[in-house]
Length: 524
Image (tube, rainbow, N blue to C red; front, side, top):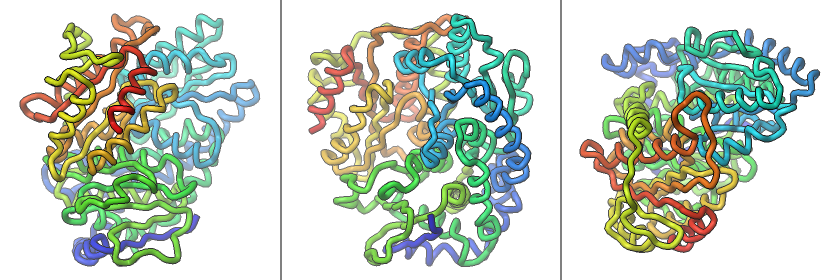
């Protein structure tokens, strides 16, 4: 892939206005030098321990031989199925890397019991599980690890031969007992910036991705990104992200360019910028998205290509981007930090993420026994006065402000229930507004920050479901079904509380197939 970035229309005007200021303030070289003062005094303490991502090369150079040695060992033993248990950036980056290299990595980034059960019960004989958690105490990954450990033991397999851990030094997971290997990540890198650390490299490398080439690509622009001049592509992209009045960034990969990259960029940008009532809302979409057919005044399209087109409309507002994957990771991480500087917020904290976790824990301790507000065939309606699904959706979308967005939060099985994803385009067409689609609970570790900390522009459609067959979590007083329900209800409660006051409609499917069909029909 070639390297290039072109802005046009209002995005170009933003770059022209902001680039000289960024160069004068030496933002490029200061980020490269890991200067924590860039984002202001209140952000300095957090920034001082979150800038390790600007130079991943030395750590990667030590890690890669260890990863490749372990991969060889596993392959010699016939252990060729790699499963990754991780959330947010810990799973999204490896998903992009392995899709790019066309190697198989099974992602377990859910608490939906049907999806966990299917992954846990498939081909254990050839399976190695990578459990990735920066804190070492992430409830989803802890639960998944427990399920796999029990499954290995039931199959007569020693879990110590099949578990590989990725975590920060000193975390509760940083123990070699009972596991095949432990890889430490750089503690000075936050999860969403961790694509080129152990969190991205270990599962991708074990699955067969060319992680040496990835790191080589990431270093191609090292000097450029550290420069304070007009050649610094990250300064251009960060200035474009901060285009005044266009705070919805629609990311569309053209053709086969960087599959899944939009989802990775979405979590990076949303969690980094969505706070203090400010932010850039990234929308992972596609080139035929309804939002691009009738471009709203607050939407900025960002097209990702294998190679930049020779001709495009220079008057149309857009960003055109092309880069090898490793290079793209670095440019977007720098650009997001630049956008944070321009917006006047810290791009490294996530103050509103913990609220949803606390609410979920309280729901697990005292499960809510609330009756639905209405029942319409295979769906139960919560948080509405409407009596039908059609009327409930109309009531929710009627609350969209002129500059608003709709967020679909699907607490379902993202492989078996994939048909629901069609709802995004249908509601974007129907409302004329940007629509995001997130599989729960993984989005809670990324875009969930923007929903609560960003501008109060969103309305929220939660989709949950009954569980025909639940799955126990060993040594825990709750099941996977209880956990995912608590996560949905807890986050919905935080969104709707007096502090955030976001409109929330929860639709619970008593029959998944029929309920999804009803939702699709109601959205038309």
